[in-house]
Length: 287
Image 1 (cartoon, rainbow, N blue to C red):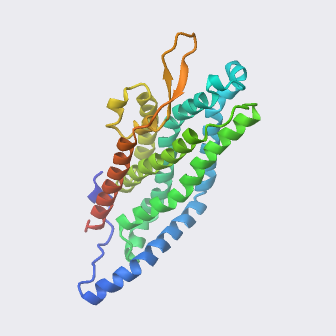
Image 2: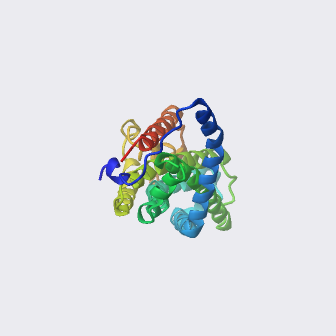
Image 3: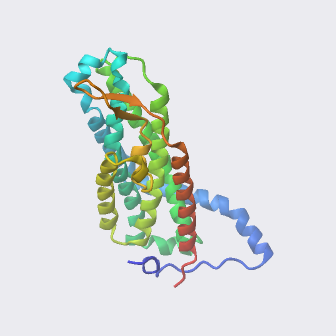
């Protein structure tokens, strides 16, 4: 379904033509946007989105921590040369490449589906809130949930590792870097899924795309960085500052690596520009 079809029922919002009207609109735009964000937070509470997020994050922590219960972990938990934190970080990056797209697709779909089923676009337009502005408000509201969710996931994995007896000093730098970059990539992917959820009424398409993106995310871990850096899913692999290295031993070594900061920054900047353009495009759609 096209963008025009998705918002065909949304009344056009006519901007004031006078200088006085334009000034008043600019003065009231910030409070109106913050109010829209607050409304989206209330919708999240009513939809029990925080509970769903907690369940997905809990599942992610469990999957990422499976290696903590293996015999190899018990042998290396006290040996800093075995790089136990790097191994755990690599495992975390593997599962997050699958769970990250699924998480943000679920959040974006639930937050937008209510607009399709409850005439939310019409109600928002009647109050002067355009579809594009509403989408941007949804992204800001969801970011207030994604940031603590991702942070809590990393802290949960680290806490569980300590509980399992990992006594080696924590590699704070790589873990903090990965957590911050994971938040940024999740928000970028959430922006794409929000746009998709807004232009497509059937949210099963959004959910299916999120599930497919999870499998693509895992596949990108096996593809050279020179290729995956051209795809949005590949950045789940590129932000992981740990990788396998060749070794003469039976078990491959895991080392820390530098992430391609330039490519990651370019991807995030491009996402901001694209999301701004497509949401403003939604504002210009008329019946």
